[in-house]
Length: 367
Ligand SMILES: [Zn+2]
Image 1 (tube, rainbow, N blue to C red):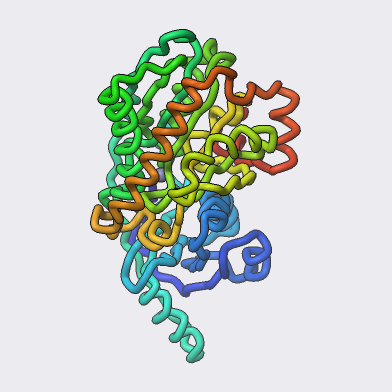
Image 2 (image 1 turned 180 degrees about the vertical axis):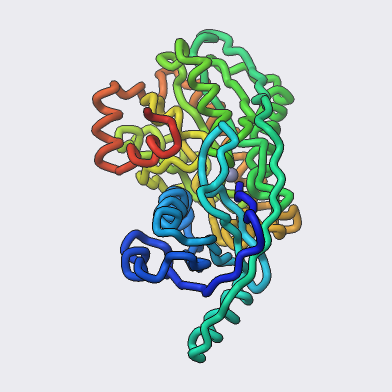
């Protein structure tokens, strides 16, 4: 959350490009007292994740340089605003300096004025009221396994959303998929060999708080948690799976995708990142998958007022839900256990190689 301005503040606008460290040093001499405009791009998952972890550091660097406030350009269309946390914490700590999102059209106006050799000035009067910390709960249900009930497949998505939009794609779509998976398996009268646990996590948008709390609370189950299957890329058609830095699951994943080939499910993406509720499981070495989906309908509305149900294409969404459901059931019911838990040393090596360790530290998953 942004702090308020103690009194209205008016200052010259200084552009800091995309807000990368080198951008900040380039204009360092002009930052004192300035209202700083950053224009990061958030068109792809990689960029969104970069911004997610870069913004807290950017705000701290600007504060240290004496800047008065930070304006973060929305990369969405026209006057649509975007929201994301400037800082992760559970203590109610505010961002280091007043930080606001500014629509693309307003950014364009400021940039045209600056290009015309005028020095645009902005006046800010930020009055933000925040409530105190409160307790929230994950919602959990399960279908107990018939042969190995102590082995658990977690199927999860986050129930919370960001405050600008209703969160239809981020992440009612994932939450709906989790509930539909439970309903469909139950309605078919199926009882898999292992237990499937359906989890709606809270507090994901503030830094994966619900999944982090789950993994801490269920620490003694991590050896027998077979996999965590997470959905959090909207309602687009399914393409395959993010395997989160692991290549040892490829053969089994290809086998699992075979019956789903007619839906277009065929891709394994090995990238590892800590951006949703799989991350605490990844840090435990538990096989963790995120459904890889067509993102083209997702990022244009991600964390905006336009994240509404009309963006859902029913057939694409149904295919995504079917993929999650069939895969969770297959992993729970197959004779041989899916994958294995990585050792702490293997997790450390993978995290260093993929640089996901820096993200885990920033998010408090790793101390
Ligand atoms: Zn999400």
